Image (cartoon, rainbow, N blue to C red; front, side, top):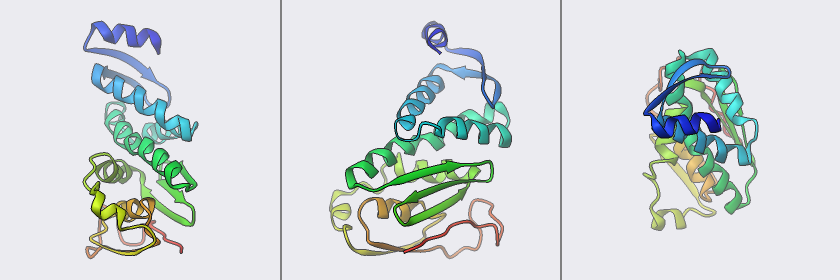
Amino acid sequence: MALLSLYLAKRKEAKARLKHIGDVVLQRKDFGALARLTYYSSKCWPDLPEELARAAGSLLKPQDALPWLVKTLSPTSYLCNKSRSLGKKVSISVSPERVSLEINDVSIAFKSLCAGFSLAETFVRGDYEVPEVLSGLRGRDVIDVGASVGDTALYFVLNGARKVIAVEPPAQRCQVRRGERETKWRY
């Protein structure tokens, strides 16, 4: 890893063989993001980067796996920090079929290929980081209309909501057929 870092410091890209994924061409920016995100996510969940690589390797072509890994790893440092600051227990498990999150008594599962996009959009871009709104969530019930795959409902729970009712009108999201949807909420 250190030799690859030195090599990429002088070049824009390098060919590498990633465990579980295969041969890829790493761009300097992708390598930096992947290294940083792997480091921070492994602080809370030491096995997560390898679980994600294994899932990516079985689902995607090697070059398509890198953007998915970066998008899926992006929210993990946020989840880790937020769970610690709120004193909540968070666990993440990954398989080729799904990415599952459990936060205290709340569990949610996303199809693996949907998880990266949904979680990154909600947690990394900061679209919902409105202090006036977040400060009013603690201990309150929330109705999340247009909940998509449940990522925003999870965000509200992490920010102190007591209970979230998530509603998504369209029957299909992220190319998930009826009956395959794995979102479960327990209160």
